[in-house]
Amino acid sequence: MIIRRYRSGDLRDLYRICLRTGKSGDDATALYRDPDLLGHIYAAPYGLFEPALAFVVEDELGVGGYCLGALDTRAFEQRLEQRWWPSLRRRYPEPDARYRDVWTRDERAAYMIHHPWRSDDDILADYPSHLHIDLLPRLQAQGTGRQLIDIELTAMRDRGSAGVHLQVTAGNHRALGFYHHLGFIGLRSGDGYTLGLKLLVNLSSSPWLPGYSEPEIHG
Ligand SMILES: CC(C)(COP(=O)(O)OP(=O)(O)OC[C@H]1O[C@@H](n2cnc3c(N)ncnc32)[C@H](O)[C@@H]1OP(=O)(O)O)[C@@H](O)C(=O)NCCC(=O)NCCS
Image (cartoon, rainbow, N blue to C red; front, side):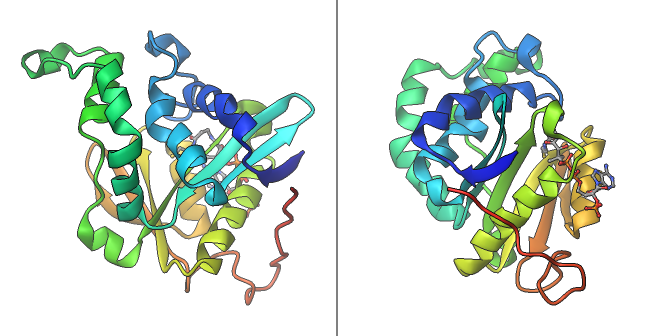
């Protein structure tokens, strides 16, 4: 197993892994008619527009996980507004709000393409970066998630980020446990949770703590 930087040839893998982990960490394949919808929102734009913060895990079966990030969330949102969402909005019409209660998963995702998530200013003040991490089951629970997120957090910190936030669905107990174990704190709760980690302090894998070993990165 190696962790390496994202390459343009990995784009389909980002889509595949995003779908296979898109149901609170489990396989969402059966939930979507269009298998690319989740990846359009949560995976592909990071590889395309912020490749310096995109890392993948590869083993003998191929790419099986990623950690994707945006250093400056607001700037990233604006980049997508100019260069990513317009063509997708033409492809996926906005669903009729009168039928919101019975929207399919595809329609809910299409709505997000027209009304993308916008992070709150007060969260961005302390946690300007954000990330997504997803591993296929064969790579889970072996320390790979920690190695991968360490590489991401180090890259963000090296680029001067003061903190990172992320979203977790309420039902994703495994991921919640993982993030709390790594030192993330709860910032908001609602349908899901927003968690945050300051990068200049309180990093469980900080070099000044005992047991830290520099994460290895290939490629
Ligand atoms: C969540 C996920 C990224 C975690 O990665 P992982 O490789 O399974 O986790 P690791 O084996 O690296 O665990 C790292 C540490 O967290 C701990 N940990 C992991 N899950 C935990 C949990 N639910 N509760 C408490 N601690 C947990 C491990 O014991 C380990 O501790 P240690 O390093 O001190 O020994 C991975 O399981 C995954 O991709 N799941 C499916 C997709 C998903 O849910 N993504 C997150 C969406 S928000």
